[in-house]
Image 1: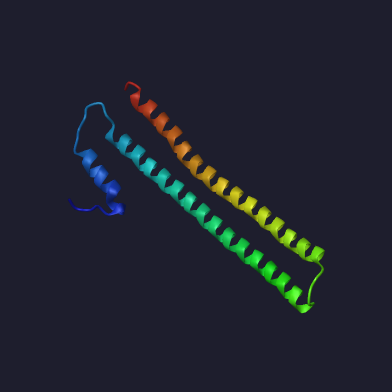
Image 2: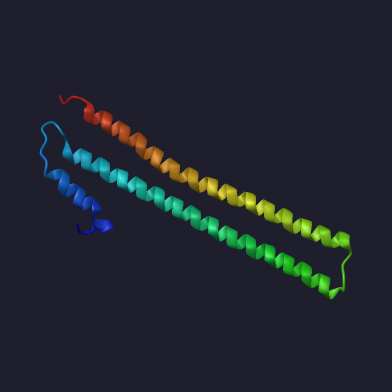
Length: 140
């Protein structure tokens, strides 16, 4: 069995479907519907990929920011000899609070990416149902 290149999948599908002539079946409409399905899946995948990339970048930013703040805190402790325990605890607490806020932002980014991807697929599904309804209508 030979492997089919991903960019040729729809062309192969079209070639296969057009071989069959079925009375009363609009092959062109079926092919157009499948093309739209593939485009919707590609768009959903691109949306998901963009969300994952945004999430990854946000994680890198959070780690970088947290590490910079902790380095700054350690540098202050070393330069002054020792900072009062309350000030040190307060610095750590602020750094951790900021990290938790950033983690909430990460969750929001992931939720938006997932919601956007699902919206693309849901929209195409609704269009697909309408297309099927139209195809099932008796010809006049």
